[in-house]
Length: 177
Image (cartoon, rainbow, N blue to C red; front, top):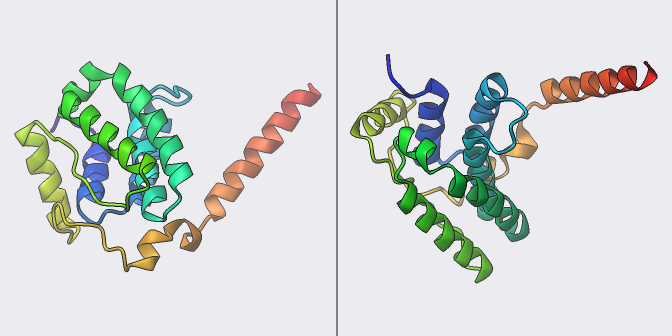
């Protein structure tokens, strides 16, 4: 048993391993909805937004990358204790994200970065998760892998479409009452 949610370990393994930021988003969004749904200032939302920012940045969508990074940074600035409890060096994280923000403003090309994991136990768990999934820890993003870079356009969205349709039907039903 570990003090870290399995979803967070999986997120970190993808973030540092195969650099599949879309998968990072998917993993933590599901966890966030199950544990802290509706809280837009949740630490999980910050991590989701950071992954989304990287996804946009790598695809050269600088406006989307800046917007999501700024939202993530805003939450992270308020969540020092939570970051520390999650084994992340808060000061270093903020420094990294501010540098990232500056790089975006200066229109510098995308570069992978690693999160400042401060807990050796978390590091060990993440590296083991990487190994189990066949990823290498802390490799740079493969900028030639178009499937990875354009992941949003190749995935099966049928479950998302069904969920959105049900939500719309529910809203419509509530309005009629």
